[in-house]
Image: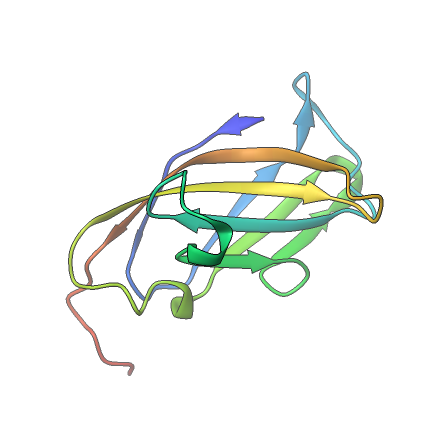
Length: 120
């Protein structure tokens, strides 16, 4: 599992890549599904998450053989937050049809307030 902190601005599109590894080696993730959940506190229920995004819409298997995914946090995930700094706990989990679940990345997501609050 990778520990990785992220920093974004409220309402921005934020793409980033993650390589799924085991012992430092890329894992073939063909057939896996992914979800990213961000919460105010780790103990919050999933129903009270700030946002949850999933594959294949916001998490794309960029190179499944080499364990590469591209995660895109859409503007809608953070536009409802107030104009202040948030420190959200997040994780990204891989799962399959047999309901085997692996946490592949986790950390904190800092959401900064934006100056421009209207769409162009």
